[in-house]
Amino acid sequence: MFNDAIKGRGYVNEAQRMAPLTHEEIATAVRGRHAWNTKTKEWEIKYRPYKNEWIVLLLTINPRIFAMPMARVIPTKIEAQYE
Image (tube, rainbow, N blue to C red):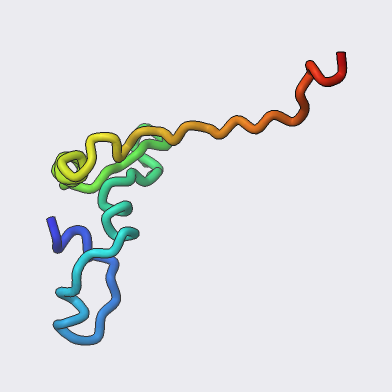
């Protein structure tokens, strides 16, 4: 899983290669990518091999990690003040 997550990492020495994962690398390991399927002539979403394992690990940290944030409601004007 680690080697698949650091696949695109540029490094100069062994210490840089084995450094801890960054947030961007973990997000890339979970996120799907659009790819053109030449056989069916359609766009499809391809995921990395360990996507489900990464999701389970992230959910053990916080079960609401993939929850959508609530939109903040800011009123523009109070209608009662104009009545």
